[in-house]
Image (cartoon, rainbow, N blue to C red; front, side, top):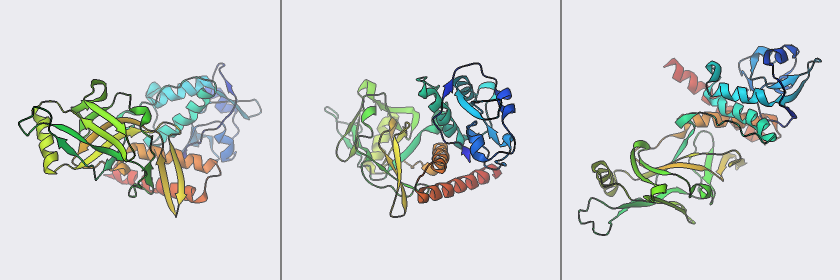
Length: 327
């Protein structure tokens, strides 16, 4: 199971005693009973045993019935996800789903949850193979080594190749909220080599009918000149962008037997000319995304084909994780 799908319940900000509430839970109940109290289930455990579950955050009455969610328990559990009290040993792929569950209770009473501290692993990357990169000479540039870099980092309404059991497309307007933010242009996604930055107007971003257009004024440095030479020669001809998807920023449907993810709103982090694409199926963020989606699909009336594909993706990811651990 992993992360348990978020749900709407009453909340309570009273004194919280986790062990006492857990002790009042009845033993030998079914899965749906325990899902009313916890935020995570061990997929390899016995669903009728309390020890299979973690992150209890609901008050439990004397009759053993789970009730309101504790806002204090939710905040404490998020702190544990972020490393507090020794952290947690649940898989990284399940952290985002557990956070979504706990954060939903806090937001129900207009409390802002602490952000999940995933670091760079949470950022997804996508590569545009036909980047249409070009280097334009700047006024007064007589060396032939310097210039302005322009092209597209993303295109709209075009299905990607299969990523990990699903295809992806980007809706026009997906980057609109990021255009006025602080975004960097990097070389090969390396933060040590900054080509430009929006707040300095050395990186300019805009959306048109085709996609996300990028204009970069690189620094007058040796490594930047070398980078432009590689682009002119065609040695580097791909653009990539790093992004995070806020809650509700994507939609999933099945079409002609394909599972399709549509990005409708993303938080853009960086754009980057790249020599090698970053394959998304190796990203921890994709594992977290699949785990959360599978949990939500299992708890709703989602299309049966969507549920089946998500279960299949989960099994493949688990197999890959075991192979990686075994070296």
